[in-house]
Image (cartoon, rainbow, N blue to C red; front, side, top):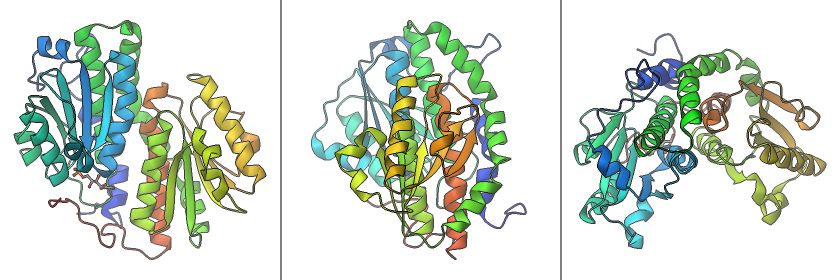
Length: 369
Ligand code: F6R
């Protein structure tokens, strides 16, 4: 049932192009606009939404952090993202105009379920983004957009994460479409890019051998840091989470702009630092700032592992290891940038003799608070 792979995780990483394509299937019509009939919240109710609040845990929370950039950019609706376990204990401000999005692969995560119950009690509308048909979270929500990743068996989430991102982009674009926004042209272009993205994920998967080799060479390290900016920041957090879970290594993700506010003190000789570089074509200011961050940490001895778009030559002088990803619109970059980090963590776990599909102390679905 592992389809020839040693681990479910490897199989699930490889299934990502299909999972992404399946999640888009039937949701973009011939004219290139979105049809999300399953979102049973009326267009007029969606036009009244004045705040979006995303609640989730772990990897699903990282998908939510990325969704915030897309939702706020395309819809201009303020969006908060909160760990489900923190949400209801701070007495959040919610009403009928609040759209709460609960993201969960299993649909059974107790913290997320309690957060959405709390939101509904306050009168908010809840949209679930979920991978498991008929599970508790979608059953208790006003509407659901299913991700079509298929069953995810490995404890560490991979294909569910990519499909959560796709679903979040669809919701953001749909909200933009329903409400009308000045980004109409951009939204059309992004929808076209999304329909191609599964091929780009496939291309990334074909170039992963050097990443595996690199991972094996780092098996005796204790710490790996991850840096990113904009949507690359949650990607850095996700890369670090995967490494903790699978390789049991100390791994931390930082917003690159925060380096000089503390984390740069951690840099020492030969410390591996993974840097997720924004596209030089999109937010070029951010690109240039991260290039100077790379310069700064390298001057202090860091060994840089750089994930950068094809054709981005400015990073070359500061990259000890260079992992290329296809060029995408800025907001979609996490769909390709996360894949090498999954492969990296999986290979490090294997090299360290860890159980890949069943990391110690973890369960696939966390049904207690
Ligand atoms: C990480 C991981 C966990 C889950 C989290 C939420 O690889 O698998 O962090 O993402 O427990 O689970 P769901 O999405 O089922 O609510």
